[in-house]
Image (cartoon, rainbow, N blue to C red):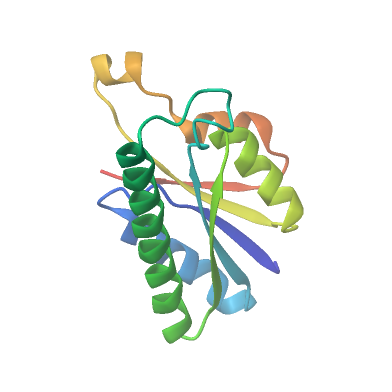
Length: 144
């Protein structure tokens, strides 16, 4: 197992995902790819980007997400793992599947959120959609 792709959504229990990635990657000396898929810029999907303040806020959000992701990768590197952080814009599931293919991922690790009934109506559970689309093993970690 050479490449493990970990889906990061900055949930408060993301450390559980990183722990599982470490447990699996260490014995195989696998490379760990931390991937956060963020929404595309509005102008990319055909909408006006809005006023300058909105664009600046978006840029700040992307910068903060990149810093958080890079910090996670650095922590894994400091523990002896080969790790890299990727921040990619696009549709979540499609982009995740595409990146898994590009990176020749042998395994995917994603978190699962336990939503209540109303949350389930309005939120997409990405882990389920990835399992439906991907052709490699997926480890789903409960994030309770």
